[in-house]
Amino acid sequence: MALPIVVAIAIAVFAQVVSATTSEPRGGVTVDMTLVGVDAIEVVYRMPAACTTLPLATPFEESLVEHSRAAWVREGDCGELDGGAIRRSGACRDVRFRVPASDEIHDRIYPPAYPIDGLGVYAHTGLFAPTDACGPVTWRFAAPRGEVVFDGRRRGRQVVVRDGDQSRPSFASVYLSARPLRATSGPVTVYAPGVPAWLRDTLESASRAVDARYRALADGIDVDVPAVVVSDREDGGAPRSKADVANQRMMRIGFKNFAGTHDDEGMRAFLRGLIAHEFAHVLQNPALGADDIAWEAEGGAEFMRWITLYRLGWRTADESAGDLADALDACIEAAGERRWTAISGRNQGRTPYACGLAIQALALASRKGGGSPEAALMLFYRAARSNPKASPAQWLECGRDLACEPRTIPALLDGDTPFGAALIAEVERLAIGAVDNAPPGEAARSRMAARTFQALMSEDCNGGYSFNTSSTHIDVLKMAGCKSLHAGLRVTGFAGVALGGVGADASAAARAACARSRSVELQLDGLAPLAVTCPALLPQPSPRLTLDAKALFARLDRP
Image 1: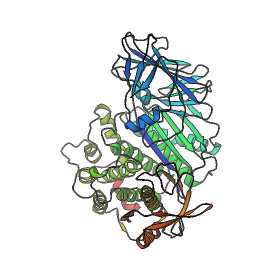
Image 2: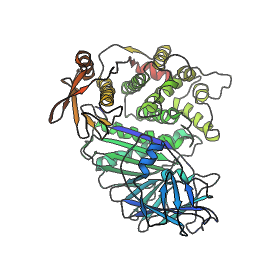
Image 3: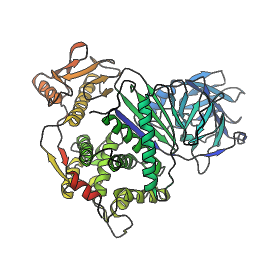
Image 4: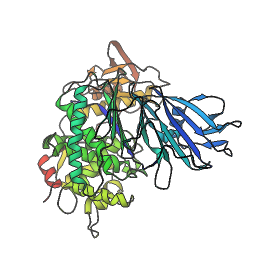
């Protein structure tokens, strides 16, 4: 079955927590973040007398920062947000904003204030963080009638956190609960009322199993289950989710439209994999994945997800080999004829996940020495704890053998061969698979349909596109500048061929239609077909791989 889309991000940070009664540092800035009701936060910037302009950090792409901050509502006349800075007027020192919670999601961006379905707000400080232009920064987090969860622990109604040499509370997550949390002796867990009971049960049982597995593997790496906050909101679209882990101690899972889903083996595998991926981020160095190497963090978490599903008996060897082949295929499609460094989207969307899994699985399959691949990965994580610049190629392929020279990761990432061709060559060198000339399966057809529709929507919408996909349909989301497409349309087929039809290839039908007339009809749910103009070139099929499960695991699990 086709599983819901899941996007996950992890950038871990440290913070030093001090008493809530600690006074404001002399000459510094205080940022108060307080829960207002159940669906908004108030953010107050308390600036020193000598500071009239307080620049804010730019934690992600500038246009997206401006878009997100446009939702802030100024309260009072003490100052305003102007050009990425807080500007104070007069003698007053407190500049106030009300920020409504929003479930708007952007790729690889922590949501600044996410609603937890009437229970409170899960916030991330990155968008609100000032620079140190006006002195050191102190954060005060408050939930006047409820409770604050910070750094994975319950903190009462208020907590004060200071920026310091060893801490970064200016890029951390905090949960502001509108009511006191239930008493528990274990990790903090919060489930919104809309989360189905079967989904909660599956997540909790998976958490226990994965936690035990990772603790057994960690061997010197601190492993603490993060505080977990889970919600499920309806927007009429396809089931999907976004999860994130911040500072290794706070985890949010935001489901969309899961109330109508059903408990089956495919859904359980998806949810167990989600937990295995996110918990794997707890094992990693906080800085892992920075500096244009997201494949390290996301690929490592994806490898742990993939291998853990197999180890715990949640996927068979053949299913696991098929899952890895799907990741390789998706990566080959994303690469086209480009080298790794020429793939502009290598840090966006699913690319760092699929390609990161492919890179690390192949590197571990070619490593020197025996033992489990998880043990080799833990060696790298331990080394990266003390040295964030530790070489993944050296540790994954050579371990502690300093005379060994890695070959797989350098060949994949640094060579002149197109990345997709390099992946195929490595699979063939390891004798774990071959190019598959059979008709594409459901997963390959679904990916190809998404690539085809992206090209069609980009042509119709002046280069922009926004949509959600499933195996049977594509939901068009809001995008400005479109000629024919608009939010609310559900595309169910191309050129008369249904998406997800058994043996049918809707993308091939779209390519044929475009070759004939430079336009293609889109089948719509409940509406007449809609003709859209074809781009100069639609995406072409890429080579696909099939893996031999026995050979693959013999390579990974060498005595």
